[in-house]
Image 1 (cartoon, rainbow, N blue to C red):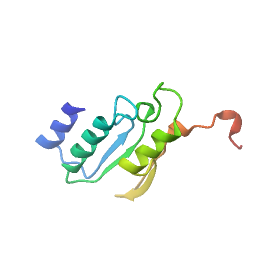
Image 2 (tube, rainbow, N blue to C red):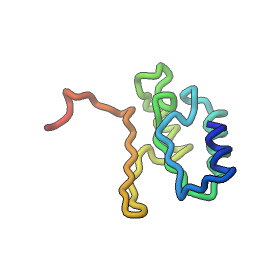
Image 3 (cartoon, rainbow, N blue to C red):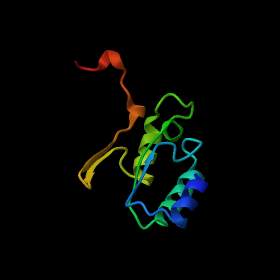
Image 4 (cartoon, rainbow, N blue to C red):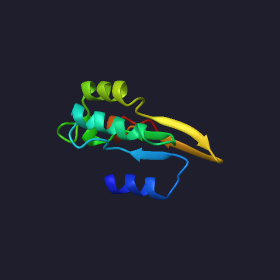
Length: 105
């Protein structure tokens, strides 16, 4: 991630940054969450992020309600939708997956 951040600072100038999960390596680690927040503040463009399994599941598989609450309080919403330059961007928290058996047709 550090390499990608440095590339953004050295020449590429995107109009936004979208992060598709895993803002931290260890779910619930406040130091990692704070580090992400500090890096995010350094960008001039908006940053949109959704949580990954490393953000919401200590075992890497099962989303924990307390970790989802922590994410929402520290980072913000766990989903987004917006239009920019004629494109619709949608970010969904796939860690809340309810399973195929529970989906309506």
